[in-house]
Image (cartoon, rainbow, N blue to C red; front, side, top):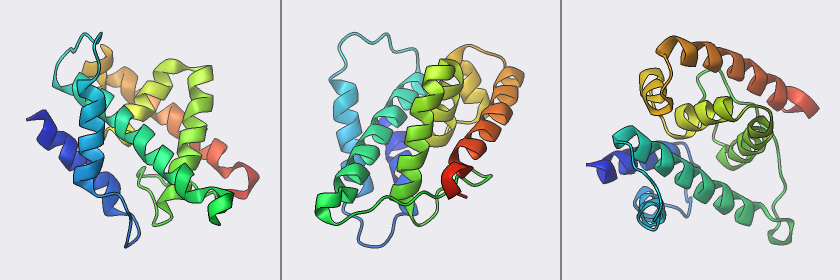
Length: 163
């Protein structure tokens, strides 16, 4: 049941990729699933916890893939594009993904909880209620934090002409 949900998330991630993308949803979810299965010391706390960890694994896989693909030695150049209001990525997905990943790493240094919220909402595709359940917080707290973190992300991603 969790594999099917992870497969759906992977398909959503890759739906907006340009034609000819080398990663397919099944390959992405299989790689993420293998990373989950290799976890020895995790106290799995239910479906949403597994999905959150799976989303994080898929994020790492996609970011690593984008970095490999964009290396200067392979002719790639980084180009920043801002995160839009609905948290969907544009067709320039690699650039968006890398920009969001870098911003998320900076956010984690400032506020780990807000970084976890972005991870679960943006990369995990979880609802506000699912994020609240996963983090053991109220729905209202997540809504408030999500509003603040979206503004922070917008500001971060708009710096240096990335809007």
